[in-house]
Amino acid sequence: MIVLSKESDFVLEMPIPFFKHSQGQSSSNYLKMLSLVSPLTPVEVYRNLTKKCWSVRQKGKVRFHTDYVVLVKAKFVVQPAGREKVRRERSKTVHAFVKGTLVHPRSSDADWKEDEPVWPKVSYNPYKNDTFVRLDTGEAVLTADYVDMYYGDVIAKGIK
Image (tube, rainbow, N blue to C red; front, top):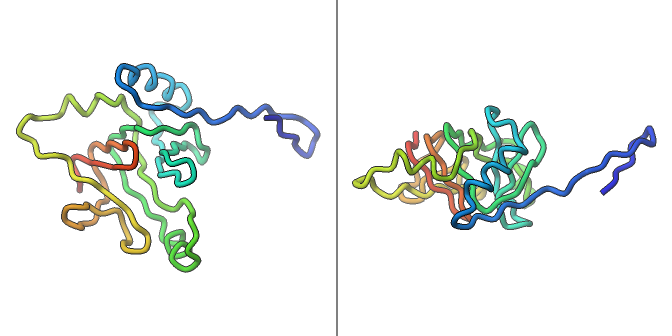
């Protein structure tokens, strides 16, 4: 796609790539994802309701879409003004996301212990909650050590 600016210059914009998770491709997809973001700078991941996937943005720009991503040192962010607009207008605007550092999908396996319980699911519904919540207890979720975001589900370890 070519975009014309006011100065009649043109900018070539590449389409935003989509990474589909499949067994055996997690390493190659992860390396491709890393080539599109600055690895040490946190990303923000939100559910893209139109494309039915996760959108990954960094510094305000969507870098790629995926059906699976893993973050560490994650913060669950809900912007209050956006939440209130959604409630008031029944509109769908991006105002909630998980912010953290992108890591290899298998990285959380290293910390997995056999006797560890299943990581709880986390969800956010702007019409019911002010924050992200654990689905099993309804408790607010603000941070987590690891967050797996796959297809439509979010699970987290080390929730605080």
